[in-house]
Structure formats: structure tokens, C-alpha cells
Figure: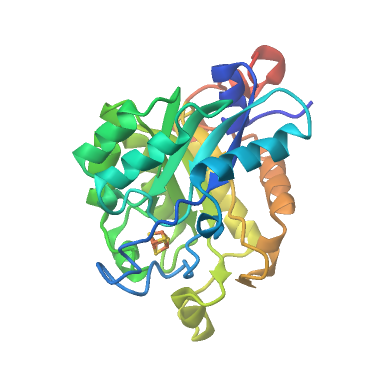
Length: 317
Ligand code: SF4
């Protein structure tokens, strides 16, 4: 039986809901102020014009996307519930009424226990957070891009907002009981491991309930691709990236749920590094390194082995 040396989302869901919960990605046809000219037209340097979009919005309503995704997963058997993940671009961008309409489209759908909404912190306001707080789901997650807590890095990757903006809206969301999932990236241009450690300290200091770790890779047709081809960006090796990830886990408060350990380039989009294509191999290597180094989530904070470290000793591991 494998051991959890970090607090995985699957274990959290099993403990919270008593069964498996799978995410269904949904595309609301949203846009992004960092692409449409409101802030910039270039976007974040690592993002291409698809913005992690599935392109489904043009053909199917949110409701139909959810029902189709549910049917696909249920056909495989087993007891499972679902979290609708409105993922692509910045889904709280635009008027609050747009967000309310999205919530109404998903309300009452079968087996839907929660939603996650991906967005930028500068696309939030009190009204939108109140809509999310009142949304009729057992759990509401807000996937918020931080990437780095260093403003010089955020400028370098053309993020279009600063770390203070993230901190403000993470606090506002947390105060309303909305679960913030912070996205961070290892190996951002110009960053050292010490910079990344400081980003983890900022995450720990906020009412953040979840983290997604991404390893930096170069996608086709991005500003980062141009910078990399011109020699202005150095990528971490797989071994370095794993070391940063393991350090990040060691520094993370144990109750924070780890939604993701690594990025997942879309087919055909990856330019470099080659190893980023082998997501399963990367995750396996991360687990092996955690075990080899005897690291667990929160160890570097001086915290003991959490209950979920050993599956024999915790019902939810
Ligand atoms: S905020 Fe998101 S969608 Fe917009 S440019 Fe950045 S990564 Fe892409």
C-alpha cells in the first residue's frame, strides 16, 4: 500500500464526502483581461491563446458539458460524485451577472457536490465573492493564480497584477468560506529556490485551502517560447524541478490540500523540456523522492507526521 506524504485531493474528497469525487472540466467561453487589451494583449508569458480552454463552450452549454462528462465517468462504474471545474481563462471577468448565470446553469444537476471557478485575483470584487458564497453547492473552490509572490517575477511573466492583489482577494474569499486553491509555478524565469520558498511562506500565511504545483514548461506560441529561443529563460532539469517540488511540500501547512503536483501540457503544445511530457513518470519520481528523503507535508515547519501520512492509521488516506 502506498503512503501519502502529502495531503492529496482524492483523500480530502473521500473524507469530506465519503466517496470519490471527480472533477469535470467545463468551458464557459470566458475571456481574460490580460489578453483582450484591458491589461495587455500578450497574456501571461507562459500562456497561449487557448488559455487552457477546451473549446467546448462554442458547441455545448455548461449544463450539457457537465452531463456529458458525468455520463462518461459513470459509464466506467463505481460510486462517484462530481465537482464542476470552470477552468479556462478568467471566469469571473466581466459583470457579476455573468457569474450568477453560470451558477444557475449548474444548480441542481445530478451528483454535482461542488464547483471550482478558475480566475485571476484582479477579476474579483465583493459582489462576485458573495455570489460564490451563496452558490447552492456543498463546496465552492476558487482557483486563483498566484504563480509567484515576487512582484519582479510577476512583471517578468507579464502577469498584470501584483502579489498584494492576490493576498487581498485570497483573504476576502477565505473570510467568506470560499476555498482558495493557489496556483504556484516552480522554476519561473529568474527565480531561485529561495524565491520559491518565500512564495510558499506567503501561501501558508493566507487562508488558502488548496495548492496546485506547476512545473514551468514552454508552450508553443507563447512569449515564453520566444524568450527561451532567444536564451533569456533557463529551465530547471527534471531533478531540480523535483527538488523544488519536494521542498515546497515540506514547507506547506499540512491541512492545505494538494490538488496537483505537476503541469500537464496539452497534446502537441509542448516545446520544452521533453521530460514534462511524462507526467506519470514525474509524479512517480516525486513520490519516490519524498520517500527517499523521508519528507512529508509540513516537515520543514517542524510539524509531526500528519494522520494521513500512514494509510493504516487514517481512514481517509
Ligand atoms: S490570466 Fe490565465 S488566461 Fe489570462 S493570460 Fe494569464 S494564464 Fe492566460
